[in-house]
Image (tube, rainbow, N blue to C red; front, side, top):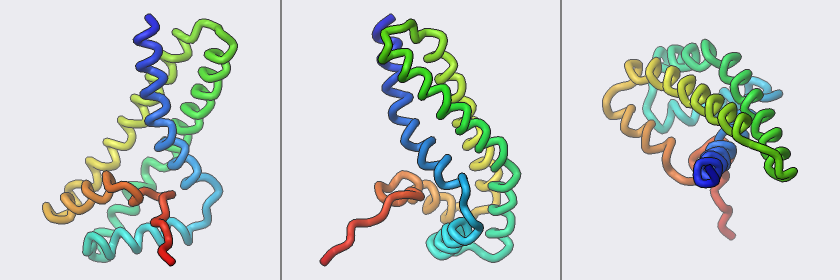
Length: 146
């Protein structure tokens, strides 16, 4: 039982940082930062204007659903932390967090499945590599050198 809870909490911690970063990136932003990100993606992948339009539409189709899922996940994680700190039974809340994590992953996969056919094989490789490279996320800035 403890091992399962520890595993769930580890998974929560790992994905929470990603979820929090995503929630922050989509919360209260003006279009300019998103546009800047899309411009960078266009440059890095060599996207055509038509590809950018299609990719933007794929993100937009799922934006509200993803926001709601991340908000629910954030709330459930906060409640789970409070339960754990108070020594309460975390079984039900940990299961809820796991379910919400699964939902967020499913939503991300939906978007990627829509974007995949828009990209050339070479662009798909670059896109996948950029998503896994440290410091290439939305909120990671490269250290400045002096």
